[in-house]
Image (cartoon, rainbow, N blue to C red; front, side, top):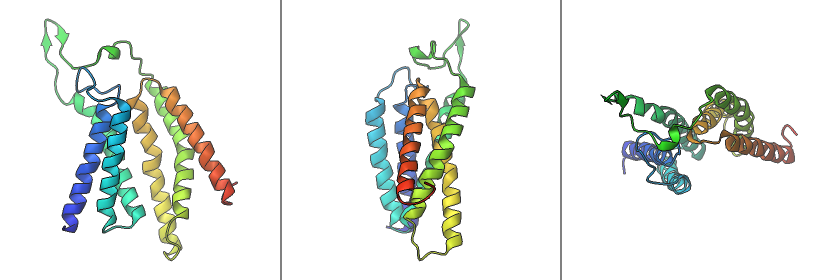
Length: 196
């Protein structure tokens, strides 16, 4: 298969993965009810991402394939919630016809606390994860190339929690998960002798 076709198919699989994840989200605004629950959507999404990684892996290094997929997901998951705003809702009898689930009425956004929490708690997670990824990088590669890769890997890893925080009604679960993951990764880095 041609390299361009493989790359295109990998990006399509990444898009389908992000779409499935969004459709399984309790905050999705495309349909009145969710047709797929979050955990099955997450599992299918991960399977599609593994297939996309495998396709990219045939002509990129494994870490470059991961970076490409994370960057595509960061962009897609950040933009998908706004697609509901593209269609202009009509008004019938003074009521909007914008499709929203019934739980949306009692949903309180608290945008600032979500954004600040995801940014503050996501940064250490991104640093620790990129450091662990840097440990698996090929040592025959030049040190400045490795440093650039690790530095640029922080951005999609940092912004991923910012995308995911809006997919849930209970952000404290995501915050708790970010804290636990950060603590575990810090412990692993301490065991291998970096930053501990």
